[in-house]
Length: 253
Image (tube, rainbow, N blue to C red):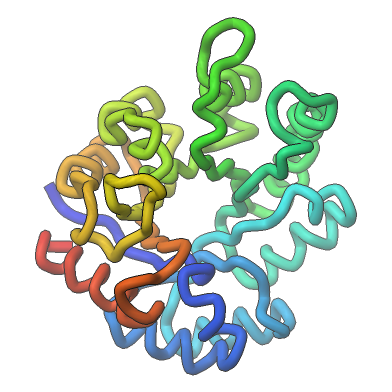
């Protein structure tokens, strides 16, 4: 069926990137990653990030950008990531005071079209990256995540599905992905233990069925898969990133 290019969410190796961003990116490239998804600029200017990634040969596919950054400086924030060359930016997380059921959640829902418009003007598509709390139910009995995508049209908000958090709430990720085929340009690959509290693991060392997820990503028209691991307990961050890439290679990716 073929494969998709593989990127790394830089948050996975954030401490390494903070110390020496260039060396970290060189290591990521050597492991066989095709691109990166940024989570901050690690003390560098957008131009420096752009030039560094271009020289190393990594595609800056996307960036996680806090909703508050858009509120503080919408045009400036979007232009920074356009300068880097990102085709996507994703709202990565909502603070408790911004989640469903609050006035601030409704304010965000009303403001997302403005963010999307500013992004479009720079050739960028806006995404939303989920956790587990979006799978709480609305007063109408549907998942908050579904409510968000039903309320905001696809031409304003696309999905970046974190398959780990889908599995954490006991939903089959590949089955859930079918609902958003054609609206899911980037899929996050993340593994974890089945026990509670959960511990994150390198791909292939947890409970996820990645062959099924990868097959559905291709079937649903996704463009990239992104490896992400929030924390590291078995190995160092770079070791986990290497293990994850080798695992994907073992699947033919």
